[in-house]
Length: 127
Image (tube, rainbow, N blue to C red):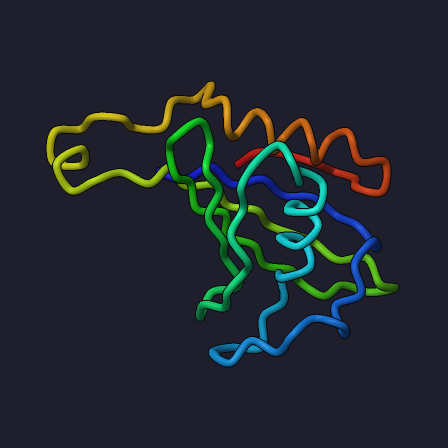
């Protein structure tokens, strides 16, 4: 199960993102920003496009997580962003219901704090 974090910002210029070849959905800017903010601390793969937005992988203390991002255009340059964080598990872990993401997952907490601490982000919430 994935955790979803939502927020609003004018910080990113969506017109400067690469075109998503699957759907006209933005999201790359957030993943690039996260990679820059965590440089030297976490290993984050380069973003790639998917039909629902953009994604990358992060190594969190030896465990892989997928970060998914998309943005919704709103008026006056204020955009709503969605960051989805999903803990990657093997087939056997899934079948045995092992290594499920806990409500207090440290990786989710780390990214939530990073987003809440950014003054240019507002209405940060977890679904």
